[in-house]
Length: 468
Image (cartoon, rainbow, N blue to C red; front, side, top):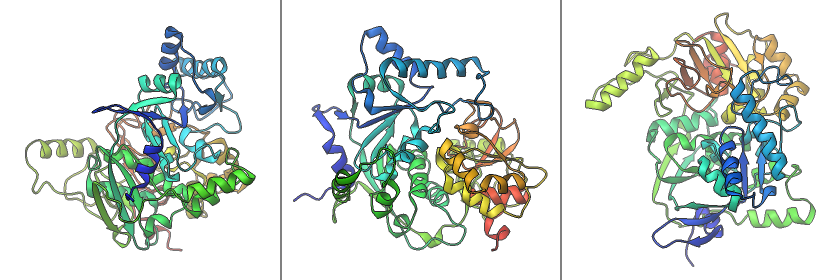
């Protein structure tokens, strides 16, 4: 009997038709949409006189360019207001479930899907957003698609897609104090580069991965795209089942038992082959931070920015250009650099576990005077729990501002922008030039590192700030 990977098992079960020497016609179980990449797709459907094939398989929420203050008021930005209204109109017209601004389950699309139990093992999931790979944490094949593909899925519930190559990244061992899943993925990307998994779907395995909570696993899979991967996934296990049980859209009663029995079969067979494999030791991973303008430019917080030794030609030129944008020098330590903003949020680290961690570490402390600190929950549910658990009070006493759910300062598509020239240490997923605002300088890090930076007012190792 052929040994197959988790990716193969899910993929092959969803192929409707294989095109010789071409892509597969691939069935999609769940389709998430938001206000930015869906309006044109719906317009094209209307122009062609085509309806939505399975509206019950599509879930919508506005998140990318919505404001994170005064959401109960009319959106001031005209384009944002029009896009959100179009989403409302299209969902009403085609009978699509919408979690709108102000509703109990509004939030970032990749946060509310798991929260509601919509995301389940063995599924295929797409969205017009690159960080759809987040859902792979549940043992699902999830990836981002373009606007024309959004239209295709709405019309047919299928997509034309070539099967990706397979990579396995194994992280074994016990994580050290102050080391989080964000540090794991930043470490991996720094090791294999921001293009190191191009063309692959990545399965994460090993004892260090298995020890993670579901929220931590989502952080890992979320940033698979930042090393060029098509997506990332982790085999479902008891941690997955415990997280899903009782969720709004999770199976109930006998259906739950049947689902879990099936989910337990979703794992890579012993001896199955991957096109590429990497192995890393958890004990080598420390708190990480980026210093450049792609997510692969990361180092340990206590490390030095790499020198140009061994670099030549265009590689050296682009490296120095990146450092010039950031205002850093090759070879210098990154610790001690002064920071202006910290941001906790996004589909990478805007979950309740992240906010709990920050609140726990800043309790009894005050943010530095030079820091503007934003906490943006990934959903209304996260916001609600943060209030109920007293986290908001702790954070506000420490000088943090809690805003309303949305993508916020992860990307410069809304009002939450980092001013030009200012430094931000962010829990988001990208640090490209201008990603958080024109001229903004972004350093990616874990929620714990962000908390430490907020208190110290400069880049520091969280293990040195919060000894208890």
